[in-house]
Structures are given as C-alpha cells and as structure tokens.
Length: 599
Image 1: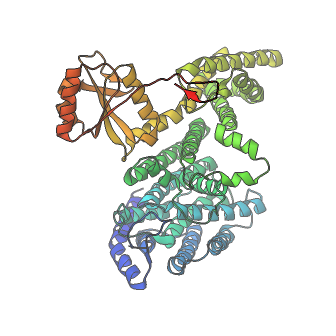
Image 2: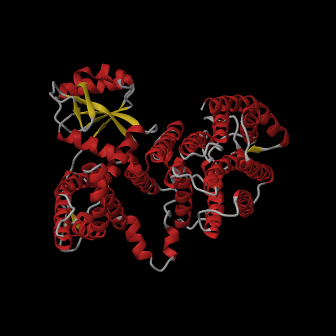
Image 3: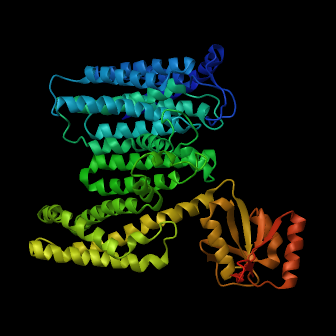
C-alpha cells in the first residue's frame, strides 16, 4: 500500500511538471483543437496532454514500480494504442481505422497474456476479451467530451480497479493503476474548466487501454483466484460502459452515425437541463465514485452486496431514461426507429414506457424477494431456506407482474405519479403477495417458507415501486433547483395558488424559474411549503430581496391587501426587479348554429 501511494505521488508530480512542455510541443507541431459546432470548447486548445499522462504513468513505474510479464504486456499494448491516438490527433484517422487498430492491439495483448491452458473455454474467452478491450478503449475516447471529465473519471476508475484487483489477490497490476491514477490527478489542473490543454485521443485511448488491460489479467491466469469476482470488475466500469451504450443507442435511434461526434453525451444533456459545466462534471464524478464504492464492497463481501449493485444499475438506468428525453437532435431523437417495421411497438415502449416499467418491475421484484430472505435469515438458517427462494422465484415472477397489471399500475404516467397512485401500488403489492403465498402453499405446501419473508418483501417492494416511479419527478425537481440558468423567483402568497405556482415551477424546467421562497401577507405557522421556505412577509420585501438574491417576483393570485401590493411594487421598482402576476381565468366556450365560437 505504501509503495502504491509513493508511485501515485511520483506520477502526479511528473505529469503536472511535463504538462506545460506538452502544451508547448502541441503548439509547435499544430496539434491544436479548434472550436467547431460539434465540440464543446470555445477557443483553440493544445491536444497533446496524453504525453504528460503517459510520462507520469510509465515514468513512475520505472522509477518505483516493477514489471512482471502480464503488466509488461499491458504497458506495451497501452503504448501502442497511445501511438495510434497520437496519429489521430495529428491527421484525424477515420473511426473504422481506430476501431481496427484497437481490435488488433487487443488481440495482441490477449495473445501475449494467454497461457496454454485456462479454466475457461478458450475461444469465447479470447473473443470476449478482444471485444471488451476495444469497447472500453473507445468508451474513454467518448467520455473525453468535457473539461476534466475523462481525467477525473479515469482516476476514480483506476483507484477502484486497484482495490478490486488487490481484494482478488492479483497485486501485480495494482501499482500500474496507482501510477495511472496519479498521472491523471497531476494532469487535472491543466484540464479542468476552462481547460488549458486536452489529453487528445492519445491520452484517452491510453487511459482506456491501461484500465481494461489490467482488468483482463486475472482471466488469463492458469487458475482464477478464489476471491475474484467478475461482477466487481464490471461495476468499476459502469460510467464508461454506460457512456458507450447511451450515446450509441440514441444516435442510432436518431438515424445518426454512432461514430460521428456531437454534443449529445450525458454530460451535454445535463448541461441542457440547467446544470453548469463544473457541476455536471462533479455529478458524473459522484456517479463514478458510487459505482467504485459498491464494486469494492462486492469484491470484499461477494454476493452479500449484489442486491445493492443491482439497485445501483436500476437507478443509473432510470437516470439514463430521464436524460434520453432531453431533446438533442432538433426534435428527431427517435427518427431512426420509424424505419423499422415494428415501429408502433417500439414507440409504445419508448414513449409510454410501459414496457420499460414491466422490465424494471421484474428486476425490483427479484431484488426485493432476495433481500427479504437475506434480512429474515442468516447463517445456517439462510442456507436452509435459500433453496426455497430459487424454487419459488419463477412463480413469484408470474404472480406479481400479473397483479401489477390487473391493479392498473401500468396505466399510470411516471411523470405525474403521486399520492393519488398509492391505492394502485397498494393493490398491486397486496394482490401479488397474496397470490404468491397461495401459489407457494399449493405447490410446496408452504414447507421451508416463511410468512416473515413475504411481509418484508411486500414492504421492500412498496418502497422500490414508489422510489422508481417518483424518481422522474425528483430528477425534474433537482434539475430545476440546481439549474444555473434558472431565474430565482420569489412567490408572493403562500396559499393554494402560491403552492400551485411553485409545483408548476418545480415540474416545468422549460420555464427556467427556480422558487427562491414564499412571502405571505402576515404571520404564518408554516416554515416550509413543498420543500420551499417561507422567507418572510410582504412588508419585509426589501430585506428579503437582498438576502435571497431574487431575480423576479410573482404575485400568485392569493389575496393581498392593495396597500401591501403597492408598497411591494414600489420596492421592486426601486430594486429593478421584474414583477409578474399569475392570472387564473376560466371561460365558457360554445358554438352558435353557424359553427362560430362564442364565449
């Protein structure tokens, strides 16, 4: 551990010191990225930061690390892919050329790592390993789309990979991952927004090659370590793998070439809903840290942490669905789907999301049912009762989704899910649990089953369903409250109309309004409404405007004394604050005998 820490520090120092020289060299040879419509930066920027990352990683390893045969193979493959990236930075290779090159380097690494005998079938292992290598390498190439994003996520992933491999009893690649993490941390001061230098394709491809190459080493040992957990390795790469799947799938749905660049990545969509660039990068850092933390837990505890890992994947999938709804391609985000013959079915699945709800519920039902057994039993009792879980899971997966459908749960919109939908959730869970119990009693006479398991499962499933359905409203709420572009609006009137206005602001990001608080006509017993503070009275408006940095004031339509309103208008005029009125109007509309409208 101490040695890995010293390598981390040395790599960070080398990378940080070499970065200015790399920027100078990029200017000299013309390796500069110019602003274009499909790029995020707005000024010419050197793109040879990968030289500093490679120098830090390899230099620290030569100075303080050690090389065995597998690690040397990974370093050689990473340098080869780095040279391919340097060529692309200078003369812009086609996407096909980069893909063929990465596959060739991956195949060479697999050939170098592969012993004569492995515990796994040779042909599937080789094919999957080469595809995994190329996929992760290009995933980090895609991830390099915003200042500091690929470097930060790469450093977090490297630390996670080191922890997982160390826990699996494979210490050899840990030092190389520590060196990579240090080099990326040393490069970050030059790459954070506004970036003074980019890592370029050479840097991003090198990062991906080191990370994926080290993850392959345990698979080609003659004997897999007993503590090696493949799920932990996969969880470490949640962010880059998610990037590839998300971008490629949505570009295909929009009828675009997945290999062409654009500002359609998850990071760009987070900015589109109102987050600042820096906050977007930190959000994705948090996602990477969460996946690495759970991967480390899985590596240490094994199957105990798998339910949490599944919940993590479900949560990230819900976030991806939410971001997919952000318009990017001039309103034709799903245009490519119109060319397939089963367009009607796909449109229902993607726009109404009922198919997605069913698939999600199958996952939630499985996780909750398994978690109920883990909570109810432990030790020998768990070993006795867990076979009942395996035997009865297919029956549960028949009973509960059918109960959800019969109860009307799939006829409800995620975006408007609320208190009024609680009866449907309750009906679905109660009906599903009762039918599962009856089926277990009929088929197995309820032997080696527990009533407590079904009660715990019912509670967990209610929480899971509510959490998944309400997640879209919560994400929309968070997008409004965290938006850097939203105007801070003070709502005058904390009555029914004021609360209605606040709800609309929180759910409608197109307004670009963020409630800064309520002010009311007099003393109120409420300190917060809908999670928004009551910050004072209308008579104290001048002080409230200064303390809460208000951009606009809206009178909600709740009763206000004329004198109070006039004083408030004068205060806003003196402060240069825009004032609006929310007007509620209902008209009766009919038609005369000639068909013309009358009101």
